[in-house]
Amino acid sequence: MSKKQQILESALQLFAEKGIESTSVQHITQATGISKGAFYLSFPSKESLIKEIIDSFMKGFVADIDRVVNSSKTPDDKLRLYFLAHLALLEKHADFAKIYAREPMHALNEEILEKLIHYDAWIDRSLLSLLNELYGEQLQGRRYDLLVSIKGFVRIYSQLVLFHPYPHDIEKIAELLVEKTNVLAIHSTAAYLTEEMVELPMPGPEEVTTAEKLLSVIEELLEDERHPPLIAESIALLAEELKTETPRRAILQGLQANLYDYAPAKWLSYLLKKYEQKKSPDN
Image (cartoon, rainbow, N blue to C red; front, side):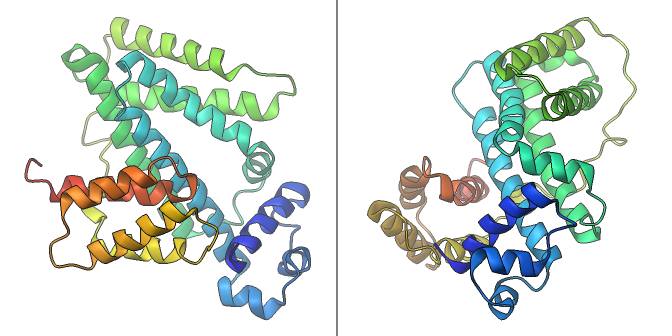
């Protein structure tokens, strides 16, 4: 495990136990067994560490949502899995999510807010794609109202899962939210929001993904020496291919298939797919 990863894991545990504000850099270095100098070589500040943690969560979540939307499941099942992905993330990281929800403002500087808006726009693009697949012309200009309603559902039930102290069945909640979404999509007739009002200003992932961006993600992955042999070889071969003048699509797809189910490479796999789509002559 790289030193940076050790710091991230120790900090995450301390934030969950003590709270973000009450956890100092000294607490983190003591828990990790490193000097403050070593900490600052990896992170210029505690704020940059918080940004990295949020970045890591959001990258994994965006990749999970993209896999749901582009899977071979039925559209109704995709919508259920979309809700389930939100709720499962909260269950997995409940302690930190509660802390962050209770004391967010100290960390939400302009740069972090911009990142969150950026990821949120990517998720909205995936959700709109799913709504088009599910309902098509049936929505008749109501797609943005439905988008906002779905995000409201997710926010309300997320608060329920996090802060109400009794066991929750997230599978049942996901099924309930599918039903509510279908009722709105099929029976609602009024519309308020327009495309201009809910403009997604951020460029899509396929627009910003470059070979240089992929290579920077690969460089971070290669700092960890614990990858299985096939994964390590695939990552190294991918780096070589991306450095060529014209990366071969068949090679990229083959290497992406090797990485697809490997959790630490989830973000790389996601970006690689978007890179392939951008380079595809069909797009």
